[in-house]
Image 1 (cartoon, one colour):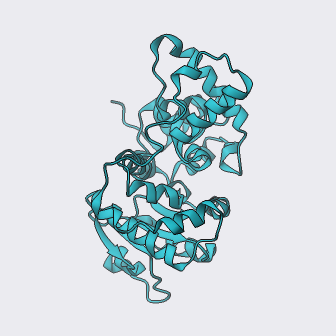
Image 2: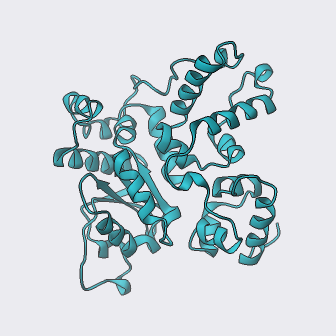
Length: 312
């Protein structure tokens, strides 16, 4: 295998971008080249630095709500190209995201996951193309959508009461108790994933000894130890300051595999916009509270969450 350099990756990104109508995104680059996100982050601060050096603008999906109709049209084109009417096999999310030119994270944030997207696509077909042959291939309810009988006992104990879940569905604001419930759920999920976990660690705990800071030693909600001196810090953002969140991530991003925020959809857009100018932006994963709580109850949702955090 040829040895990759910063220059060779920049040139490859330019070449791939020239073949696409929409701006090239990280997932498409990885899918088409086989070069891992980890390798990119060894040579650059993240995908955005590589894209900037290659002259690739940010994809429209990186800013605000993208147009569902465009995404549905791209998915329809992929189904035709893959001859899904004959194969009866729906493409995987990774394949669709690369084909459509959107990140998997953007699809997760917009639809709550791939099953949510498939459900929305099916509803669009029923409204606009009720005779589409694809309707019978996409069930009205995915087996991933309803919590199943298989549960993760360590994580389940941290889930909020049914009353609070009903409050969320009715739009009643989350409170401090929800913050701690979700943080404990993330702590327990880290144990399920085989990580050593820390509850309310100081920022200096994640930094090497020689890199300790003497002022403003902030506290994180949770941290997973992913490897030797490699972390996944986690913040539950319900009513806190976004600038304070960014300050915490600034202190630990160099020693972090991912930077995870659990936030309501209303705050997610503000966080996305705020981190866009920082070198660690490609490490940030924004989860919805319902994603976390669903992972404590359903094995499929647990595996989806693991993929989002460790493989996206």
